[in-house]
Image 1 (tube, rainbow over the protein chains, first blue to last red):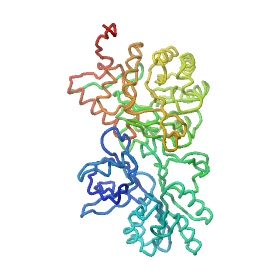
Image 2 (image 1 turned 120 degrees about the vertical axis):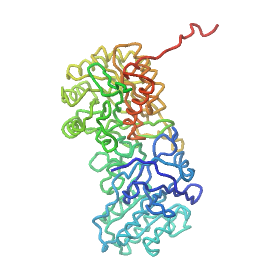
Image 3 (image 1 turned 180 degrees about the vertical axis):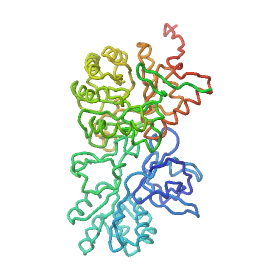
Image 4 (image 1 turned 45 degrees about the horizontal axis):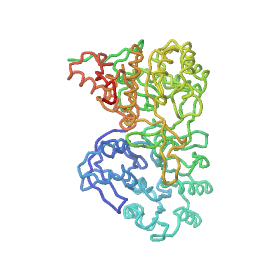
Length: 270
Length: 314
């Protein structure tokens, strides 16, 4: 059940010119949020931006003793830039939690899972790592970005999963392996790693490559999709992706977490 | 003082003039967790076709200044699933339901309307003859007064329910299509549907939505919609009107009523705030009470225009 409430800005932490973490008071949305859930956040009260923006909840934890939700944001347009400039205490309209979260309830501590993130797609994986750690389910992180600066929240991942379980790839080699994050996954699988489930969030090219890998290895997987959308609750039908049954699935309502096997990758146009 | 918020649009009686627009309110049930559906004047459901429709490939929407473009392509579950699976629940929740319908051909329209027939759980049928986002149908009827009159006549014969025709703003003279719809037997007009627009990604030089063009909605179109409501009210003073276009606040509702609308439909604002339509009912009651308005219906068509000058130059 989604709630629409105004939540105050507790803190904003800027990592560089474009990436930041926005911490909002948890309200009643925070405690109801599971890994993979998202929210619709209104930036400003004017006409630009007009629509709310969709953000996965990156983490639910206390900030200076106050229950908070964290959103990891890349400023790419007017809405995401505006949200990064809000003063502490500003009330922000938030609708959530929304969507289908990552499937976790069938996992046991004897299972081992993989987390694959690309760029800003790390967002829902932080809360997932926290939850997996709480459930004592071992997880390996494979996380790629353009350069070291774009590989965010490493401290949290290494704290939740253990530093030896976190591997990185960057386009320029400034951190970890030079190359794609999917190369790391292939390498691990070739090295004998077996994953009960692969959780992923990142750009479509990463998804496309990873979908091939998990299909070839017959691995169970759940991808958290991102899409341009207007409403966030299954009404505007703007966010759809093509499915293998010849239809379209709403990313906001049937997703955002979907098995890659239901997506018809051949019908996704660049 | 309590204001009488009820309005009558011909045979269609509504508990208040705040309805929601087709394509922005799903089948209504999606909003049941956000507001009591029975509080609204009416809800116009996502355009129904004789058979289910999967819609256009993405990208389907993009935001523009003070609005958005969409080319969903009328994705819907089809009239059969709506009547058997959705309508009973809407009825149970006390919603006043307007069935918005569309087709590629006259026969398609008649088929979906015949299937609804005289179902009393449906308060009215709204013909979508103005969707700019499908290859066939839609605008073929919406832009041509003769085709529109003929289609409306055929549909009129297929149902005893009040018949609304939703007009396209993508015409030179909206009063021509308004007259054609009424000549064909429309009881009520709703206006406006979206305006055809185009937005471009300058880096890729591609249109920002897959269908190339899309329908512009939101606050950006509001003054155009109000002007068209005013024009149609002047041309057809006795025909009831649903005003639609960028409505977000009670002030916007009042502008439409004063211009000549008997009721309004909230559209794109439902995406930004799913509770907005219920809040508008309360805000309208409050405004009327504060302004000594006894019946909201008395506001309709009360625009006081100034005389226009006879010559541009002295």
